[in-house]
Length: 183
Image 1 (cartoon, rainbow, N blue to C red):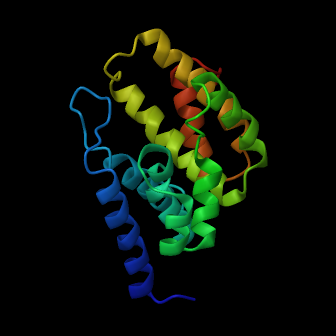
Image 2 (spheres, one colour):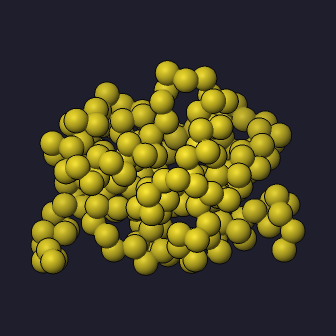
């Protein structure tokens, strides 16, 4: 088992790496929040609300959008963070060469067969995004698009159930609030 200083170092290494990679990116909210707030928030949700203490999972949560949204490669992640982090990130990374609707369809399909660790990252990611969407509608989005996102996220969520009860309860509350499901 790794000592505390090693774990903290591994987490901070991922935060530093992701901060550099996402340095010029912003969220689509009206405040144009720095993008790095998202992956850090996903890791925080997993740790604080989900009781997830697996360092590889927390690193993967912090790094989960680097391959999809920056010039980072899976090989680069593996050489810096190891094969397990690479594997988790690869499972939650969309292929940007595919059309958007196909990427969304594949997220639904792959949710059921993803590893437990990838499912944890996906749960944290969905929880962060849905809370953010509840807080404010992204620039350029209509209310209909926000509703569609909630319905699509629920389909992904169906394949993630049985992974982490605490996170699933929080997501379910959001789906009830938005009228996606009945209480």
